[in-house]
Length: 289
Image 1 (cartoon, rainbow, N blue to C red):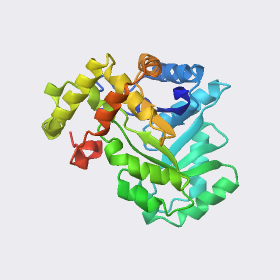
Image 2: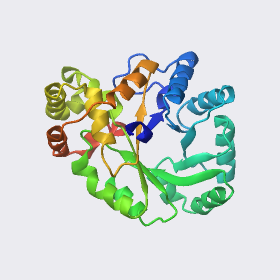
Image 3: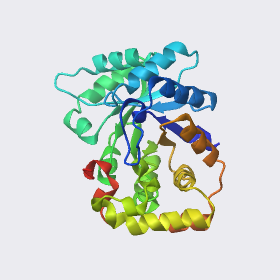
Image 4: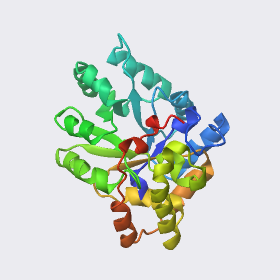
């Protein structure tokens, strides 16, 4: 089942997020509604982070009121004098859970600058407070380096219609072969795929041709942009979990409905060959808009 690979992203619950988000973050009632619907629909995993505003606290309040808890993937940034045991304790308290499924270094640089923390994380695994150690990354070079870290269980990286098979298949397949779990994010590229191409910021105009191609593919196959984007990623066998964020219950329901669509092989083959030369265009942190 495709639903089993779906991970609900919760950055939108704690921050105003996304290039195409005009409504801001949901209020607490709306946030609880999203989490309740995800629970009902059988979504088992939530992705969050200490840096996502009050996202972890919202999840914790939901867990306090609900008998059915989610499996949590959360991330931490390393600050001076941080102790892993304290970071884990604080996260467990905010999230109101007894253990964390995957505790991620929020960046590749965090693990490179603080390799001594790996042993502390392993001790947390032994204590049963976390199940797996992960790293959130951006580049293939970062992934390739982390393949040599046997202690790292999970890698989370971008993957979508533009940051696609052409760019990621080889390194993801290599990661799987070394026993890593591969989770992906940015399936909608922070909402860029839904933005009208004549409203693109100047810095993103080089993507216009590819975005128009994607719109044409969706139209030709009688699919929504969201369905094309989501199914393209979730159908890849070398991807274990796909992170999708939503701003409303309706968006969540739309995504779940889209999973029932079938993506024609010829459409997949066209998308696989899209090649964006500049990786900076695919990284929202580089957009500065």
